[in-house]
Length: 329
Image 1 (cartoon, rainbow, N blue to C red):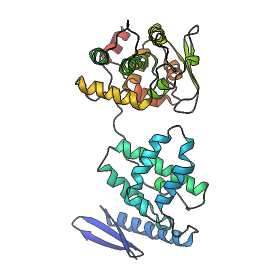
Image 2 (cartoon, rainbow, N blue to C red):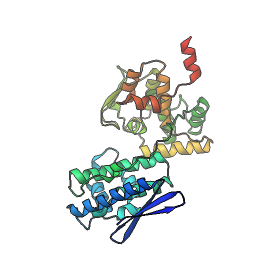
Image 3 (tube, helix red, strand yellow):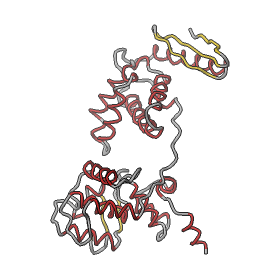
Image 4 (spheres, rainbow, N blue to C red):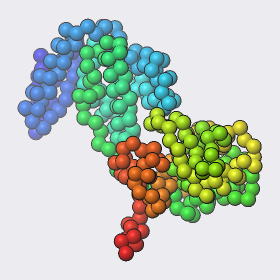
């Protein structure tokens, strides 16, 4: 039975579930009553359902990690996100008693620890688990993650490297355009320059094979990308020059780097150079902003691999207003 208690100008609704009390505070008594009614309805629907009584959310997550996650290209990052959820109270909730309010409480707790964008990604991941358990395993009756409010998105990132920062990173990495890049950190700097020329992601660069490069057509073919589609990336003269420099080292792959070592070396270079808040992925924004001066937005989307133009415009295209003013003359 639900109870509603007024405290000051707020109303707290409480619902008891098998000895455990769930509560939430609202600005009005009507909202509190509606929440309590829905909570009791959800509880009753669980009791009438066929959900196994001894399975926890953690059990669903672990099964998903074993059976589903390994099939994904982003399996490593998904494992990290799911591993973090396993350490929270949400993982201990019995599936038979799982309610949207449990997921909402987990969301609110995480928002106190990390940025809303991180919580949004984790919420999408746990929602995928629930959705799979609903449709493929028939272990739950609905997806409670879809019934709660998603965290508000942060402002789109606009950081771009300056010419001075690019120069300092290359200097720390001992890179110059006349020396074969035998050292790993030299190739990290070269990869950063190549990313600025092509808008390729770090993982795409690290997976690039020599047979993927067509020097005659000046095209790099990416068979599998983040969104699951292949694409051809046009190569500027500067990008071709960088590839010829790499040819001198006779590496097994184009850059002979893995994403983790590339990211680690790049972060170290930024830290030593006193460069703050710069990520390797910011090279993608820099590249697309430069390219936007030469190609239209549809061609830009083909180069970048974006299937949603809104994401391309809102997240990666960051022109200088002064440059746009010059184009108007």
